[in-house]
Length: 134
Image 1: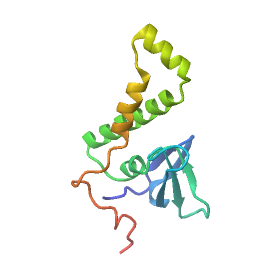
Image 2: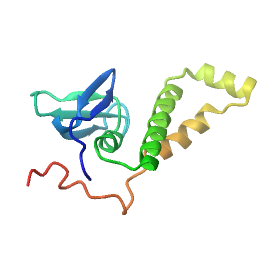
Image 3: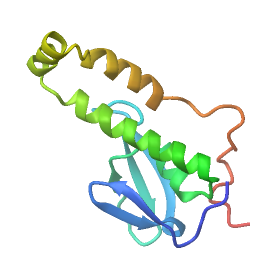
Image 4: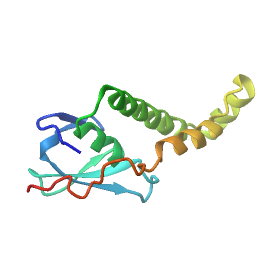
């Protein structure tokens, strides 16, 4: 994986950071579920930055990607955003949408969560040397 230097990476919550200053990513699994938030460690700060995006999404934006991969990354971000909005929807509104509009929000939450939580395949490059200076 090649990190593009100087590229501005969207971390969520209105925060952007330079790709070449990010030195570590730690997924937050307690409280919100896996893949939903990440602590981002940067070279210029002692404390990590809280990101509302998964470590896979952040890594994808940090690296050089062909156009198809960039499009897939944008699609993944849209799925994660939609999933968060649906999950925050009150149960009474979910029932109303299902009854009156035929939209089963619970079904879509499960389906989108399955897509968003996809583990990297064997074809994905290993991350061990992502921040190797040598």
